[in-house]
Amino acid sequence: MLRLRWTNWLLAYKGISIIALLIIVSVTTTTVLAVRREQATYRAELQVQAVQIVTALEIYSRDDLYYLNVDTINDVFEDLGEQELFFSFGRVFDPEGRILADAFDDSLGYSDAIDPLGKRIL
Image (cartoon, rainbow, N blue to C red):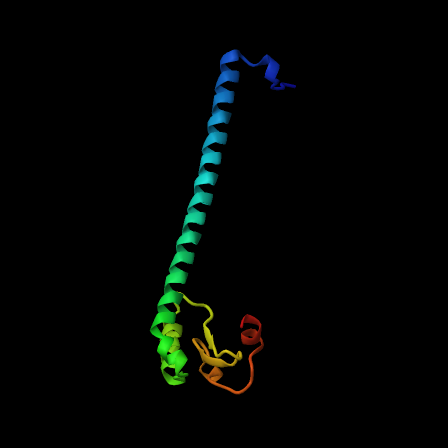
């Protein structure tokens, strides 16, 4: 029975095998690190975009929130809900935790009931 033993290999084959193994390990490590860095960069960019969008929404609807102009707030959030580009969830609450507007559910307009999520957030 023929067995391949490391000790019986020629020195050239041992060298080639070690170099090939080192190349494979270094390429794999470099690829994994690059993918992780790209994911972290992408996540950071998404967080910056989310902050910018929320800030823009806050500035845009500041007066409507102050005067509780629910119709205008609903219109803005309905438009955002229709696009479905940035938001998977979007609600506006009053200071007591009642829902003023929802981006994806028109039936959750202004109500007298305090929403548990709104109460917990505020």
